[in-house]
Length: 91
Image (cartoon, rainbow, N blue to C red):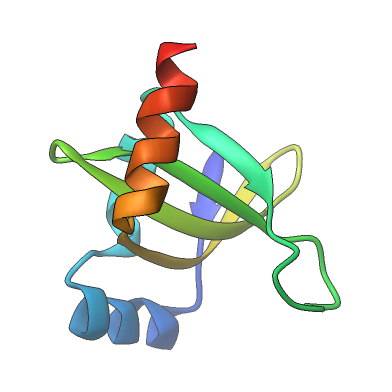
């Protein structure tokens, strides 16, 4: 799987959340859970994936095709999201 992103958005994400898009592959290499991100009408199919990065649960919003994951954002998961991740991974 290949990863891509908008470079300006990547720099903004690093400033805002302290997490770089270049590390997304580490998250997807581990155990993840993915949901359809339908919180808003994005006019495209977005996904919300939770996984571990440096021992912390992170949330990645992304687009996905058979060949490419396009990263939109990465941030630390909220407490509720973290609990959901660990519950789903255990089951």
